[in-house]
Image 1: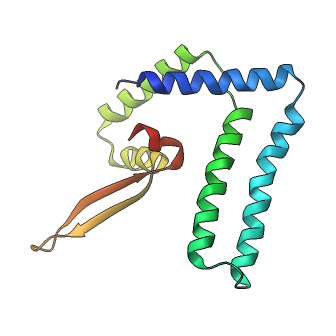
Image 2: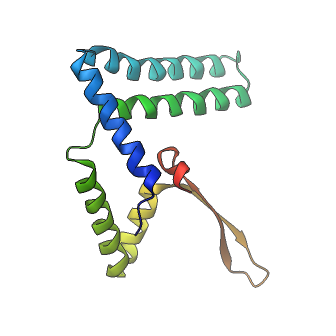
Length: 142
């Protein structure tokens, strides 16, 4: 399993941002930045329920806020070890999962990375996987 160079760069940037925030004593602001999108999402849901938002407006707002929430959470949750060590652990975990042949383990790994699987029914009655939609955190790698 090859970890793309841009993934390493992303991990390093997140760790650097966390270190800078901690150095500035800005941890409280970081936590508040995580709370804001959550509060805004709850407000958008209320507006949708009472009819002030259409379903499309709500879904667009929800996607935007969820993306912001993921970005803010990344800033306050740096890797617990150096980046090279983290990448080696990810590679090792991927190799173990690939070698086991355990269907249950495959399903768990897929569910951690993929948000939704789409399948189409074939003329012979079988199903064929047509699309895998990765979770927001992994979309840039697909």
